[in-house]
Image (cartoon, rainbow, N blue to C red; front, side):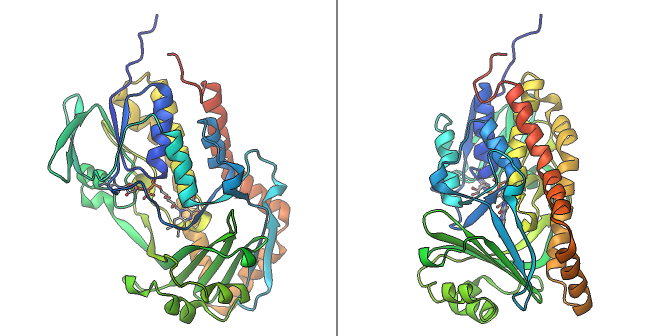
Length: 401
Ligand SMILES: Cc1cc2nc3c(=O)[nH]c(=O)nc-3n(C[C@H](O)[C@H](O)[C@H](O)COP(=O)(O)OP(=O)(O)OC[C@H]3O[C@@H](n4cnc5c(N)ncnc54)[C@H](O)[C@@H]3O)c2cc1C
Protein backbone atom coordinates (compact mmCIF):
# COMPACT_ATOMS: atom_id res chain seq x y z
CA UNK A 1 0.00 0.00 0.00
CA UNK A 2 1.37 3.42 -0.87
CA UNK A 3 1.70 6.03 1.87
CA UNK A 4 -0.51 9.13 1.87
CA UNK A 5 0.84 12.13 0.00
CA UNK A 6 2.40 14.94 1.99
CA UNK A 7 1.83 18.23 0.23
CA UNK A 8 4.58 20.72 1.13
CA UNK A 9 3.79 24.12 2.64
CA UNK A 10 4.55 26.24 -0.39
CA UNK A 11 5.28 29.92 -0.98
CA UNK A 12 4.90 31.20 -4.52
CA UNK A 13 6.88 34.38 -5.07
CA UNK A 14 5.21 36.58 -7.68
CA UNK A 15 1.52 36.99 -8.48
CA UNK A 16 1.91 37.26 -12.26
CA UNK A 17 0.67 34.80 -14.88
CA UNK A 18 3.06 32.01 -13.83
CA UNK A 19 2.57 32.50 -10.08
CA UNK A 20 -1.22 32.67 -10.11
CA UNK A 21 -1.58 29.72 -12.50
CA UNK A 22 0.76 27.66 -10.32
CA UNK A 23 -1.20 28.72 -7.24
CA UNK A 24 -4.43 27.41 -8.81
CA UNK A 25 -2.77 24.19 -10.00
CA UNK A 26 -1.11 23.35 -6.67
CA UNK A 27 -4.20 24.33 -4.69
CA UNK A 28 -6.24 21.86 -6.78
CA UNK A 29 -3.93 19.16 -5.46
CA UNK A 30 -4.57 20.24 -1.91
CA UNK A 31 -1.19 21.87 -1.45
CA UNK A 32 -1.15 24.51 1.31
CA UNK A 33 0.01 27.37 -0.87
CA UNK A 34 0.40 31.14 -0.43
CA UNK A 35 1.43 33.88 -2.88
CA UNK A 36 3.67 36.86 -2.08
CA UNK A 37 3.48 39.73 -4.60
CA UNK A 38 5.66 42.81 -4.34
CA UNK A 39 3.15 45.24 -5.88
CA UNK A 40 0.75 46.88 -3.45
CA UNK A 41 -2.13 45.76 -5.69
CA UNK A 42 -2.16 42.70 -7.92
CA UNK A 43 -2.06 45.05 -10.91
CA UNK A 44 -0.65 44.50 -14.40
CA UNK A 45 0.73 46.37 -17.37
CA UNK A 46 -2.22 47.84 -19.25
CA UNK A 47 -1.69 46.22 -22.61
CA UNK A 48 -2.77 43.10 -24.42
CA UNK A 49 -1.49 39.57 -24.72
CA UNK A 50 -2.08 36.56 -26.92
CA UNK A 51 -2.84 33.32 -25.17
CA UNK A 52 -2.27 30.67 -27.79
CA UNK A 53 -4.14 27.38 -27.94
CA UNK A 54 -1.43 25.39 -26.10
CA UNK A 55 -1.69 27.69 -23.07
CA UNK A 56 -5.46 28.11 -23.23
CA UNK A 57 -5.80 24.31 -23.19
CA UNK A 58 -3.70 24.07 -20.02
CA UNK A 59 -5.71 26.86 -18.36
CA UNK A 60 -8.92 24.99 -19.24
CA UNK A 61 -7.57 21.70 -17.90
CA UNK A 62 -6.87 23.52 -14.62
CA UNK A 63 -10.46 24.76 -14.56
CA UNK A 64 -9.65 28.33 -15.66
CA UNK A 65 -11.85 29.66 -18.45
CA UNK A 66 -11.37 33.01 -20.12
CA UNK A 67 -14.92 34.37 -20.57
CA UNK A 68 -16.09 34.99 -24.16
CA UNK A 69 -16.70 38.66 -23.27
CA UNK A 70 -13.04 39.18 -22.45
CA UNK A 71 -11.40 37.60 -25.47
CA UNK A 72 -11.13 37.94 -29.20
CA UNK A 73 -10.37 34.56 -30.78
CA UNK A 74 -7.50 34.93 -33.22
CA UNK A 75 -8.79 34.61 -36.73
CA UNK A 76 -7.28 36.22 -39.75
CA UNK A 77 -3.82 37.78 -39.52
CA UNK A 78 -1.77 39.77 -42.02
CA UNK A 79 1.87 40.71 -42.23
CA UNK A 80 2.89 43.68 -44.35
CA UNK A 81 6.25 44.84 -45.65
CA UNK A 82 7.46 48.44 -45.49
CA UNK A 83 5.51 49.29 -48.66
CA UNK A 84 2.31 48.02 -47.08
CA UNK A 85 2.20 44.93 -49.32
CA UNK A 86 1.00 41.68 -47.81
CA UNK A 87 3.84 39.17 -47.39
CA UNK A 88 1.91 36.69 -45.31
CA UNK A 89 -1.69 36.20 -44.39
CA UNK A 90 -3.49 33.33 -42.82
CA UNK A 91 -6.21 32.24 -40.51
CA UNK A 92 -5.44 30.68 -37.12
CA UNK A 93 -8.88 29.03 -37.23
CA UNK A 94 -7.65 26.65 -39.96
CA UNK A 95 -6.23 24.57 -37.12
CA UNK A 96 -9.32 23.58 -35.19
CA UNK A 97 -8.51 23.58 -31.49
CA UNK A 98 -10.89 24.09 -28.61
CA UNK A 99 -10.32 26.38 -26.74
CA UNK A 100 -8.75 28.51 -29.47
CA UNK A 101 -5.92 31.04 -29.37
CA UNK A 102 -7.21 34.37 -28.08
CA UNK A 103 -6.22 37.99 -27.60
CA UNK A 104 -7.02 39.35 -24.16
CA UNK A 105 -6.34 42.52 -22.19
CA UNK A 106 -3.77 41.70 -19.50
CA UNK A 107 -5.99 43.22 -16.81
CA UNK A 108 -8.83 40.86 -17.81
CA UNK A 109 -6.53 37.83 -17.81
CA UNK A 110 -5.24 38.81 -14.40
CA UNK A 111 -8.74 39.23 -13.03
CA UNK A 112 -9.69 35.75 -14.23
CA UNK A 113 -6.56 34.23 -12.66
CA UNK A 114 -7.20 36.05 -9.37
CA UNK A 115 -10.78 34.78 -9.31
CA UNK A 116 -9.56 31.23 -9.95
CA UNK A 117 -7.05 31.63 -7.11
CA UNK A 118 -9.71 32.99 -4.71
CA UNK A 119 -9.00 30.32 -2.08
CA UNK A 120 -5.27 31.01 -2.03
CA UNK A 121 -3.95 33.49 0.56
CA UNK A 122 -2.39 36.34 -1.44
CA UNK A 123 -0.12 38.87 0.23
CA UNK A 124 0.33 42.05 -1.79
CA UNK A 125 3.00 44.69 -1.12
CA UNK A 126 5.19 41.82 0.00
CA UNK A 127 8.56 41.72 -1.76
CA UNK A 128 10.91 38.80 -1.29
CA UNK A 129 14.53 39.86 -0.84
CA UNK A 130 16.08 36.40 -0.97
CA UNK A 131 15.85 32.72 -0.12
CA UNK A 132 18.21 30.42 1.79
CA UNK A 133 17.84 26.65 1.55
CA UNK A 134 18.10 25.03 5.00
CA UNK A 135 17.68 21.47 6.20
CA UNK A 136 14.15 20.37 5.25
CA UNK A 137 13.00 23.79 4.10
CA UNK A 138 13.69 27.24 2.71
CA UNK A 139 14.13 30.43 4.73
CA UNK A 140 12.57 33.41 3.01
CA UNK A 141 13.66 36.99 3.76
CA UNK A 142 11.20 39.75 2.91
CA UNK A 143 12.21 43.31 2.02
CA UNK A 144 10.46 44.68 5.13
CA UNK A 145 12.89 42.72 7.32
CA UNK A 146 10.50 39.89 8.25
CA UNK A 147 11.27 36.23 7.59
CA UNK A 148 9.44 32.95 7.17
CA UNK A 149 10.08 29.32 6.46
CA UNK A 150 8.40 27.07 3.89
CA UNK A 151 8.93 23.50 2.69
CA UNK A 152 8.94 24.60 -0.95
CA UNK A 153 9.38 27.94 -2.69
CA UNK A 154 8.28 28.56 -6.26
CA UNK A 155 10.07 31.54 -7.80
CA UNK A 156 7.63 33.07 -10.28
CA UNK A 157 8.97 36.57 -9.88
CA UNK A 158 9.82 37.39 -13.47
CA UNK A 159 12.92 37.94 -15.57
CA UNK A 160 14.81 39.80 -12.82
CA UNK A 161 13.87 37.23 -10.19
CA UNK A 162 15.21 37.95 -6.70
CA UNK A 163 14.61 34.28 -5.85
CA UNK A 164 16.81 33.15 -8.75
CA UNK A 165 19.56 35.68 -7.93
CA UNK A 166 19.76 34.70 -4.28
CA UNK A 167 19.66 30.98 -5.11
CA UNK A 168 22.04 30.81 -8.07
CA UNK A 169 24.12 33.99 -7.92
CA UNK A 170 24.43 36.69 -10.57
CA UNK A 171 26.38 34.58 -13.11
CA UNK A 172 23.52 32.11 -13.63
CA UNK A 173 21.00 34.94 -13.92
CA UNK A 174 22.60 36.70 -16.85
CA UNK A 175 20.15 38.12 -19.38
CA UNK A 176 20.94 38.95 -23.01
CA UNK A 177 19.57 42.09 -24.58
CA UNK A 178 18.07 41.21 -27.96
CA UNK A 179 19.05 44.53 -29.53
CA UNK A 180 15.36 45.47 -29.66
CA UNK A 181 13.30 47.74 -27.48
CA UNK A 182 9.52 47.82 -27.30
CA UNK A 183 6.64 50.17 -26.54
CA UNK A 184 3.15 48.82 -25.94
CA UNK A 185 -0.25 50.06 -24.89
CA UNK A 186 -3.95 49.30 -25.07
CA UNK A 187 -6.36 51.96 -26.23
CA UNK A 188 -10.12 52.15 -26.41
CA UNK A 189 -10.99 53.10 -30.01
CA UNK A 190 -13.99 51.08 -31.23
CA UNK A 191 -13.98 52.79 -34.64
CA UNK A 192 -10.37 51.77 -35.31
CA UNK A 193 -10.33 48.14 -34.12
CA UNK A 194 -8.78 46.10 -36.96
CA UNK A 195 -10.77 43.09 -38.13
CA UNK A 196 -7.55 41.05 -38.04
CA UNK A 197 -4.21 41.14 -36.28
CA UNK A 198 -1.85 43.21 -38.42
CA UNK A 199 1.93 43.35 -38.16
CA UNK A 200 4.13 45.51 -40.37
CA UNK A 201 7.88 45.07 -40.79
CA UNK A 202 9.77 48.20 -41.80
CA UNK A 203 13.55 48.50 -41.78
CA UNK A 204 14.77 47.96 -38.20
CA UNK A 205 11.22 48.32 -36.83
CA UNK A 206 8.04 46.30 -36.34
CA UNK A 207 4.56 47.49 -35.49
CA UNK A 208 1.54 45.43 -34.56
CA UNK A 209 -2.15 46.16 -33.93
CA UNK A 210 -4.21 43.46 -32.25
CA UNK A 211 -8.00 43.55 -31.74
CA UNK A 212 -9.09 43.21 -28.10
CA UNK A 213 -12.57 42.84 -26.64
CA UNK A 214 -14.89 45.80 -25.91
CA UNK A 215 -13.57 48.12 -28.62
CA UNK A 216 -9.97 48.08 -27.47
CA UNK A 217 -6.77 47.69 -29.48
CA UNK A 218 -3.40 46.43 -28.29
CA UNK A 219 -0.47 48.07 -30.07
CA UNK A 220 3.19 47.06 -29.90
CA UNK A 221 6.05 48.94 -31.50
CA UNK A 222 9.54 47.43 -31.67
CA UNK A 223 12.76 49.12 -32.73
CA UNK A 224 16.36 47.96 -33.12
CA UNK A 225 18.41 50.00 -30.65
CA UNK A 226 21.80 49.80 -28.94
CA UNK A 227 21.65 48.76 -25.25
CA UNK A 228 20.31 51.43 -22.95
CA UNK A 229 18.70 53.50 -25.71
CA UNK A 230 16.16 54.89 -26.01
CA UNK A 231 15.63 55.67 -22.35
CA UNK A 232 12.39 55.38 -20.39
CA UNK A 233 11.60 59.04 -21.06
CA UNK A 234 10.73 58.12 -24.62
CA UNK A 235 7.34 56.63 -23.78
CA UNK A 236 5.64 59.81 -24.98
CA UNK A 237 3.06 60.08 -27.80
CA UNK A 238 5.21 62.59 -29.72
CA UNK A 239 8.17 60.18 -29.63
CA UNK A 240 6.06 57.31 -30.93
CA UNK A 241 4.69 59.47 -33.73
CA UNK A 242 8.22 60.53 -34.68
CA UNK A 243 9.54 56.97 -34.65
CA UNK A 244 6.66 54.97 -36.11
CA UNK A 245 4.37 57.46 -37.84
CA UNK A 246 3.74 57.63 -41.56
CA UNK A 247 3.66 53.91 -42.36
CA UNK A 248 0.18 52.72 -41.53
CA UNK A 249 -2.98 54.85 -41.74
CA UNK A 250 -4.75 53.22 -38.78
CA UNK A 251 -1.71 53.46 -36.51
CA UNK A 252 -1.32 57.11 -37.47
CA UNK A 253 -4.91 57.72 -36.31
CA UNK A 254 -4.24 55.83 -33.07
CA UNK A 255 -1.12 57.93 -32.44
CA UNK A 256 -3.34 61.04 -32.50
CA UNK A 257 -5.41 59.66 -29.57
CA UNK A 258 -2.65 58.76 -27.11
CA UNK A 259 -3.21 61.57 -24.63
CA UNK A 260 -3.71 59.95 -21.20
CA UNK A 261 -2.98 56.42 -22.45
CA UNK A 262 -0.40 54.52 -20.36
CA UNK A 263 2.51 53.60 -22.65
CA UNK A 264 4.95 50.98 -21.40
CA UNK A 265 8.49 50.78 -22.61
CA UNK A 266 11.04 48.03 -22.03
CA UNK A 267 13.95 46.26 -23.67
CA UNK A 268 13.36 42.77 -25.08
CA UNK A 269 15.66 40.30 -23.38
CA UNK A 270 16.15 36.63 -22.68
CA UNK A 271 17.99 34.54 -20.11
CA UNK A 272 21.38 33.29 -21.24
CA UNK A 273 20.58 30.02 -19.41
CA UNK A 274 17.37 28.20 -18.56
CA UNK A 275 17.10 27.11 -14.92
CA UNK A 276 14.26 25.39 -13.07
CA UNK A 277 15.92 25.99 -9.71
CA UNK A 278 17.68 23.83 -7.17
CA UNK A 279 16.62 21.67 -4.22
CA UNK A 280 13.43 22.99 -2.65
CA UNK A 281 13.37 26.13 -4.77
CA UNK A 282 11.63 25.77 -8.14
CA UNK A 283 11.74 28.45 -10.85
CA UNK A 284 8.97 28.83 -13.43
CA UNK A 285 7.91 31.31 -16.13
CA UNK A 286 10.13 34.30 -16.85
CA UNK A 287 12.13 33.61 -13.68
CA UNK A 288 13.22 30.35 -15.30
CA UNK A 289 13.39 31.21 -19.00
CA UNK A 290 12.69 34.82 -19.93
CA UNK A 291 12.40 34.96 -23.70
CA UNK A 292 11.72 37.57 -26.37
CA UNK A 293 8.03 37.91 -27.23
CA UNK A 294 8.39 37.21 -30.96
CA UNK A 295 6.51 33.91 -30.83
CA UNK A 296 3.94 35.17 -28.31
CA UNK A 297 4.76 32.25 -26.01
CA UNK A 298 6.41 33.70 -22.86
CA UNK A 299 3.19 33.53 -20.89
CA UNK A 300 2.19 30.39 -22.80
CA UNK A 301 5.24 28.49 -21.62
CA UNK A 302 4.81 29.96 -18.11
CA UNK A 303 1.29 28.52 -17.99
CA UNK A 304 2.60 25.18 -19.25
CA UNK A 305 5.27 25.25 -16.50
CA UNK A 306 2.56 25.65 -13.88
CA UNK A 307 0.62 22.67 -15.22
CA UNK A 308 3.79 20.59 -15.47
CA UNK A 309 4.77 21.50 -11.90
CA UNK A 310 1.42 20.24 -10.61
CA UNK A 311 1.81 16.97 -12.54
CA UNK A 312 5.33 16.40 -11.21
CA UNK A 313 4.18 17.23 -7.69
CA UNK A 314 1.37 14.71 -8.08
CA UNK A 315 3.73 12.05 -9.45
CA UNK A 316 6.10 12.51 -6.50
CA UNK A 317 3.16 12.54 -4.06
CA UNK A 318 4.55 15.74 -2.60
CA UNK A 319 8.10 14.50 -2.12
CA UNK A 320 9.97 17.57 -3.35
CA UNK A 321 13.45 15.99 -3.33
CA UNK A 322 13.51 15.36 -7.08
CA UNK A 323 10.96 17.97 -8.14
CA UNK A 324 13.40 20.37 -9.84
CA UNK A 325 15.09 17.53 -11.74
CA UNK A 326 11.81 16.06 -12.95
CA UNK A 327 10.44 19.46 -13.99
CA UNK A 328 13.70 20.20 -15.77
CA UNK A 329 13.55 16.84 -17.56
CA UNK A 330 10.02 17.51 -18.71
CA UNK A 331 10.39 21.17 -19.70
CA UNK A 332 13.96 22.08 -20.70
CA UNK A 333 13.83 20.99 -24.34
CA UNK A 334 10.43 22.61 -24.87
CA UNK A 335 11.28 26.03 -23.46
CA UNK A 336 14.75 26.11 -25.02
CA UNK A 337 13.30 25.43 -28.45
CA UNK A 338 10.63 28.15 -28.07
CA UNK A 339 13.18 30.65 -26.73
CA UNK A 340 15.57 30.04 -29.67
CA UNK A 341 12.85 30.22 -32.30
CA UNK A 342 11.55 33.48 -30.78
CA UNK A 343 15.06 34.93 -30.93
CA UNK A 344 15.47 33.90 -34.60
CA UNK A 345 12.14 35.39 -35.67
CA UNK A 346 12.89 38.65 -33.86
CA UNK A 347 16.24 39.00 -35.59
CA UNK A 348 14.75 38.22 -39.04
CA UNK A 349 12.05 40.83 -38.56
CA UNK A 350 14.68 43.57 -38.20
CA UNK A 351 17.04 42.60 -41.03
CA UNK A 352 18.37 45.70 -42.78
CA UNK A 353 20.05 44.18 -45.85
CA UNK A 354 17.67 44.77 -48.81
CA UNK A 355 18.48 41.46 -50.54
CA UNK A 356 18.02 39.47 -47.32
CA UNK A 357 14.73 41.26 -46.71
CA UNK A 358 13.52 40.57 -50.27
CA UNK A 359 14.41 36.88 -49.93
CA UNK A 360 12.71 36.66 -46.54
CA UNK A 361 9.52 38.29 -47.79
CA UNK A 362 9.47 36.16 -50.95
CA UNK A 363 9.95 32.97 -48.98
CA UNK A 364 7.16 33.95 -46.60
CA UNK A 365 4.88 34.75 -49.54
CA UNK A 366 5.42 31.44 -51.33
CA UNK A 367 5.40 29.16 -48.29
CA UNK A 368 2.19 27.10 -48.57
CA UNK A 369 -0.34 27.69 -45.81
CA UNK A 370 -0.27 23.96 -45.05
CA UNK A 371 3.42 24.24 -44.10
CA UNK A 372 2.88 27.13 -41.68
CA UNK A 373 -0.19 25.35 -40.25
CA UNK A 374 2.01 22.34 -39.55
CA UNK A 375 4.60 24.52 -37.78
CA UNK A 376 1.91 26.13 -35.66
CA UNK A 377 0.41 22.75 -34.74
CA UNK A 378 3.88 21.57 -33.75
CA UNK A 379 4.37 24.69 -31.58
CA UNK A 380 1.11 23.98 -29.75
CA UNK A 381 1.48 20.18 -29.46
CA UNK A 382 3.38 20.03 -26.12
CA UNK A 383 0.79 22.25 -24.40
CA UNK A 384 -2.15 20.33 -25.85
CA UNK A 385 -0.59 17.04 -24.71
CA UNK A 386 0.04 18.49 -21.25
CA UNK A 387 -3.61 19.48 -21.02
CA UNK A 388 -4.68 15.91 -21.86
CA UNK A 389 -2.30 14.58 -19.21
CA UNK A 390 -3.73 16.98 -16.61
CA UNK A 391 -7.26 15.81 -17.38
CA UNK A 392 -6.22 12.17 -17.25
CA UNK A 393 -4.71 12.88 -13.81
CA UNK A 394 -8.10 14.14 -12.63
CA UNK A 395 -7.72 17.91 -12.95
CA UNK A 396 -9.43 20.29 -12.50
CA UNK A 397 -11.29 18.58 -9.66
CA UNK A 398 -9.42 18.28 -6.39
CA UNK A 399 -7.70 14.94 -6.40
CA UNK A 400 -7.70 12.23 -3.80
CA UNK A 401 -4.27 10.74 -3.48
C1 LIG B 1 6.26 43.27 -25.38
C2 LIG B 1 5.88 41.92 -24.85
C3 LIG B 1 4.83 41.24 -25.43
C4 LIG B 1 4.49 39.95 -24.99
N1 LIG B 1 3.47 39.29 -25.59
C5 LIG B 1 3.20 38.02 -25.22
C6 LIG B 1 2.13 37.29 -25.84
O1 LIG B 1 1.42 37.80 -26.71
N2 LIG B 1 1.90 36.01 -25.44
C7 LIG B 1 2.64 35.41 -24.46
O2 LIG B 1 2.40 34.22 -24.14
N3 LIG B 1 3.64 36.09 -23.83
C8 LIG B 1 3.93 37.37 -24.19
N4 LIG B 1 4.91 38.06 -23.54
C9 LIG B 1 5.66 37.42 -22.46
C10 LIG B 1 4.88 37.47 -21.15
O3 LIG B 1 4.49 38.77 -20.84
C11 LIG B 1 5.74 36.91 -20.02
O4 LIG B 1 6.39 35.74 -20.43
C12 LIG B 1 4.86 36.62 -18.81
O5 LIG B 1 4.28 37.80 -18.33
C13 LIG B 1 5.69 35.94 -17.73
O6 LIG B 1 4.91 35.81 -16.60
P1 LIG B 1 5.58 35.59 -15.18
O7 LIG B 1 4.46 35.45 -14.24
O8 LIG B 1 6.60 34.50 -15.28
O9 LIG B 1 6.41 36.91 -14.91
P2 LIG B 1 5.91 38.39 -14.69
O10 LIG B 1 4.78 38.70 -15.59
O11 LIG B 1 7.11 39.27 -14.78
O12 LIG B 1 5.34 38.40 -13.21
C14 LIG B 1 6.21 38.39 -12.10
C15 LIG B 1 5.47 38.87 -10.89
O13 LIG B 1 6.33 38.78 -9.77
C16 LIG B 1 6.30 39.99 -9.03
N5 LIG B 1 7.61 40.13 -8.38
C17 LIG B 1 8.79 40.44 -8.94
N6 LIG B 1 9.77 40.46 -8.03
C18 LIG B 1 9.20 40.13 -6.85
C19 LIG B 1 9.70 39.95 -5.52
N7 LIG B 1 10.99 40.12 -5.25
N8 LIG B 1 8.85 39.61 -4.53
C20 LIG B 1 7.50 39.40 -4.80
N9 LIG B 1 6.98 39.57 -6.04
C21 LIG B 1 7.81 39.91 -7.04
C22 LIG B 1 6.04 41.06 -10.07
O14 LIG B 1 5.50 42.24 -9.50
C23 LIG B 1 5.05 40.34 -10.98
O15 LIG B 1 3.72 40.46 -10.53
C24 LIG B 1 5.24 39.37 -23.94
C25 LIG B 1 6.28 40.08 -23.33
C26 LIG B 1 6.60 41.35 -23.78
C27 LIG B 1 7.72 42.08 -23.11
